[in-house]
Length: 378
Image (cartoon, rainbow, N blue to C red):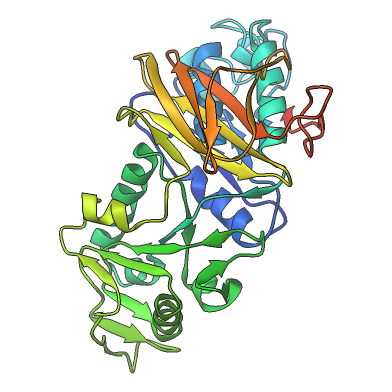
């Protein structure tokens, strides 16, 4: 697939329920070396969001790795008589396009233009360089195929808790473990050049022989393998007909509670984002450029956040404004491969931070000002 993507409809993503499925698309893009991950959003959204809510939905997806946006859809801006409306419009009294009963759609309002400008700048920057997550979260397709609903529930809970702790990850599956990723110096390296130092597995009932062997080699080379919850009872090869009993897993860390305990968090790679106070509503995305580190923060909650952020990177931190393109230098300290800065995020607010060496002109070296379109309205 050239551009992995998701289709967000029917308020699948909304303020009262977080949904992490956009990471399926961004993870696929990362694994296979694709710079873009797409969302098609709002084609059948009910309730229809206003401008502020639409921005929240877009930010929610971008902080989960989406960086190519298709806003659906705009047939016409003029009202249409009842005889020309679709049945769904007659039933709800809301137009599918821009005009008619219910007023204009959010993307036709002038207040939406700054949202588009910001999303265009941010998503373009988030397509540069390579992803930086150090954790792979095994997606238990094989166990789910066997009807193991607990495996699906387990991986979704772990994903939510990792993101709430600002510990970004990619979903990795049997194909990724079996053939896509290379084992190099104790790390699994995907086709984007991104290195995973730990693989976390949710509660599962079965795993393939090739994946188990790759995980054993990964652990022997210094990588961290962590089983959360039930460990597999079966190992399948090319089919389930001759599946064998799973061997012992003494070479891996096991947490039978299935939770992200303090011991599990300590076993994970050193975090690239550390906030001075626990803020589960704040999500973070990190990408590495040639000579800079890019961080995108989003406060999904109603409560403003004020804390101190310690970020992995070398050089001067800069705040990049997605709406205006302005660049500011926050107060902070740097040393030992990290930069410490104050982080303030209002309700539903985002912040884009770039860390790198400054040239004599004050511009960031190795970071080009990119303006390729990454958002469209159909």
